Length: 201
Image 1: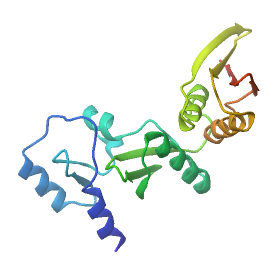
Image 2 (image 1 turned 90 degrees about the horizontal axis):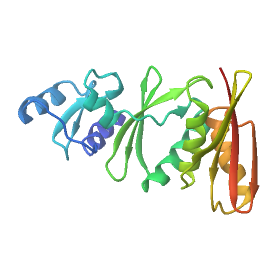
Image 3 (image 1 turned 180 degrees about the vertical axis):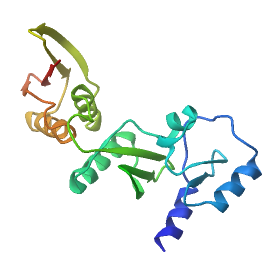
């Protein structure tokens, strides 16, 4: 039942860019004959690997393999997926564990993307964790300043017009969920949420 459902919803998957592919009939035949390894993408009329992150074709990797990593903890993972998809303006339709540290997602607006599961702070850069945290709450962050001191590099991301100190703390917690060492300290003042990070070379 689950396999049948997955085959049905996988056909709804969409990617944002087109790329050179074999003939339509050849692709469809390949997907029909090997559904364990390929996904038929109806709107782009293309057959792509079930796990595009492992593909040798960069067009497929760029189109389907997301650089938005997910936590290994299931409850945290579901929370991150929910926030991530809300920031995209959509919601989750189906999720499949592909094994080897990869999760595939299909959304209600037809997206198909595969995400790498992180298992330590080393897999998810601190600055990217902060950036993703702000994005999840609908804000764009930018590096305001940094300085070098005895091989330590300090910096902080700022975002204006955050609604409250509570939301700023939520953003901080989200960043820590992605990388537990991503935030050295945080503060909220005059509508500005500031998350400090430190990188030791």
